[in-house]
Image 1: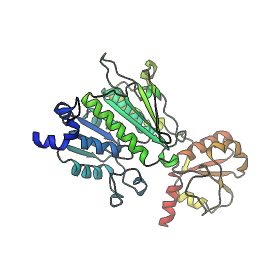
Image 2: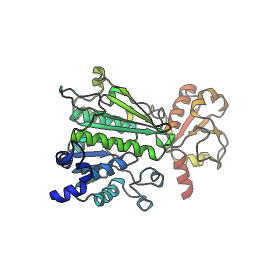
Image 3: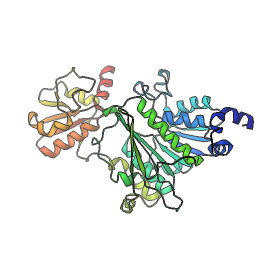
Length: 374
C-alpha cells in the first residue's frame, strides 16, 4: 500500500495524538488470531480489519444458522448453512483488501491448536464453551502468547487480557488464576440456554478489539491482572483485580505432549454413567405411557412444548420435586442438552440403580428439527 493510500484509509485514527504512522505500521505488521467467528468474533473482526491489522486468522468450524443473525451481524440470511470462517473472510476482504485474512474452517482441538496458535502474535478468544476456553488458555501459556478473553451471558459481559508479559519479565494472570477448575456441564448456562441480548456481544467483542489494538500500539492501559464486567441493564462497569496464583500453574500442561494428552472435553463433561439418547430415540419414548418426561428449563423459556405429555420442573427445583416422578424410567430435556445432563447426574445420584435416567442429547431444539423432517 502506498503512503498516500495508507493515509487516506486510516486518516481518522492516524491523526490521533500518539498514534500517527508509527502505530499504523505496528498494526500492519501484526498477526492476530480470532478463535470463533460468532457473537464476539464478528464485531472484533470487523474493527480489527477496519483498523488495518495486517494478518488475521479466523478459526471456526461451525456453520451460520438463522439463530445467529440477531447478534452475528457479519452474516445475512443468504449465508445460512455456510462455514462461518470462510464467509467472514470473504466479506472482510471486501472491507479491507489491503490486508491478509486467513480462514481456518475447523473446530480447534488440542491436537493442532499449538501449531495454529503459534503462528500469531495475539490470540482473541471469541468462543462460547469452557472446553475450548481452557484449551486456548493452556496453549497460550505454553506458547507465551497474550490472550484477549471475552464472554457474555444474558445481560452481562466480561473482558480481560491474560498471560501478557510485564516489564519485569513475568506473565500476568491467566484464565485459570480466576477460574482454576472447569465447571461441569450444565452448571453454567451458555447462550443457547440462558439467552443473550444481541447488542451485548457487539459491545464486548468491540472491547476485545480495543484491547488488541492497545496491545499492538502500546497506547492506553491494558486490562492486565483485571477482569472487567459490563452490565447492560444500567451500563455499570466494574473491574476485579486478579493475582497470579502459583498453585494454578500445576493445572497447566508442562509441554506439547502433555497438552495433547489432556481430554479437555472430559474435564468439562458429566460423569460417564450419564445416559444420553438422540432425537429419534427420544421421539419413540414420547409415545410410551410408563415413563416420566421432564422439561428442566425455567418456566418462562421458549419454545413451549405441547406435542407430548410431560412435566415442567426447573433444574433448580428438581431435587426437591423428584418425588413427583413415579415411573421407573425418567427422561429429562432442556434447550441444548447441557442442563439435562446435569439433571440426569443429580437424579442418578439420588436414585442410584433403582431408576433409569436419560438425557436428550442436543436438547429440545434437536428433537424439533428431527420432528420437522419426519
